[in-house]
Every structure is written in structure tokens, then in C-alpha cells.
Length: 88
Image (cartoon, rainbow, N blue to C red; front, side):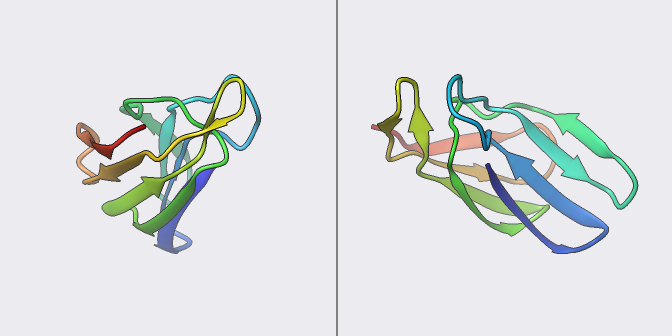
């Protein structure tokens, strides 16, 4: 599972930490509750994340049956847009 954030009142988590099936779930943390927002374009698990809750990036990961993917998606933090930069 990838994630990003700079404080205990704002964070983002995306993908899945568990093996298959990988998920494309994206949730944001507002300091009190997790909020489910728009899913990623492709479900992955074991991906990496970097950034903040308003500008984050997910990279790499695995898709069933455990194949590595070179996938990069950007999160703009508006709850509506996840853009895929690369996938293979």
C-alpha cells in the first residue's frame, strides 16, 4: 500500500498492502476519519507513495498473479482526478 502525508491531520493511502487481488482504493485522512475517494485507474498492491494528501504519487507495485508493473499515477487531492502517467 502506498501512502503520503506530512501531518497527523492529513494523509492519503492508495492501493493495497495485501497480495491479490490488488485494489485501486484511495482514502484520505482528515485527522478524525478515513474518507473513501475516487479509486486509482488500476488496482495494485505493494506500491510506493510519496508527497502530501493534496499532491501525491503512486509508483510501481504488483498486479495478480504477482507481476511487477511500471505504473505511476498522480493524485491532485481534489477527490476527482487520478492520472496514469505510465503503465506496463
